[in-house]
Amino acid sequence: MDLSELDSVINQKTVLVAAGLASNGVGTINDAKKISMRTKEVGALFSLDAVQAVPHIYVDRDYYDADILFCSTYKFFGPHMGAAIIKKGLLESLKAYKLACATDDIPFKLELGTQNHEGIAGIEPAVEFIASFGKGKTRRERIISGYEVMEEYENFLADKLRSALKEIPEIKLYQAPEGVRKTPTVSFTIKGMNSGDAVRWIIENYSIFVAHGHFYASTLADVLGINENGGWIRAGFEPYNTEEEIDEFIKAVKELITK
Ligand SMILES: Cc1ncc(COP(=O)(O)O)c(C=O)c1O
Image (cartoon, rainbow, N blue to C red; front, side, top):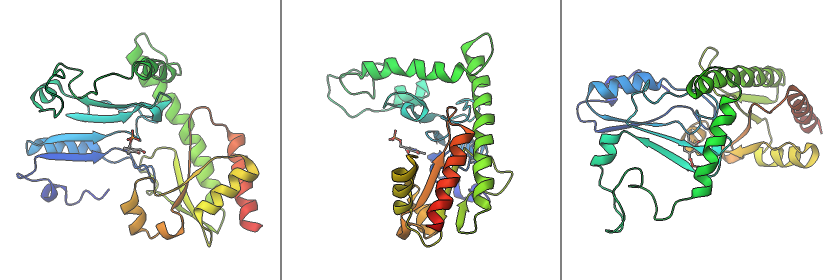
């Protein structure tokens, strides 16, 4: 993200800044701390979309001084739920448009009438799964160290895939430069091939599921001109992925290109 004009883009007229922490399309982790600091300098509210970051890196709401932070539990091994973490004073002052008889009590203020209890119950084990990789006396310590373990392993896998893909002349990788922190999201296109056709072939012949499209990063995809050809092919990693799967995936891509 180009932050060179941050001071003029965020100015005394700014009321709310909404920023993304990690790109769903290409995995770049943005300097949200810098955006937040400028936002607070002008007295505006800061909302952070951490949906794509939380599955891979430790995110501390207070480090970013986020008034609102979003994440989706289904992205980190949990049920199909979304979470909005809103500072109490702000949530209290918000006007919620809903039935007059629905409660304004927190945490129910922005919820539907009946809760998804089974979904809510499924969130804690998902958090525990992340903590299970870590060490420490408290759950917080285990979550932080669990994320460190996950991040190191996932980056190791992603780097292995990126290095292998770079060797294939028909492949174009889309990623921020070396040294920019990224999620283990590896997006690429294959010269002369529609990305939808490519992923379908890989599924049918190798039973490896990688998705294709713009992944809601449609502006970036438009600017890069890749939407006409089915968008990116995107491979991502989780702690349960293995090196053997990468070898198999590379084999599939190479066979697809030469077939
Ligand atoms: C960065 C980002 N924000 C928001 C969303 C939407 O989240 P949900 O599917 O929970 O509505 C996504 C989904 O891919 C995402 O990657």
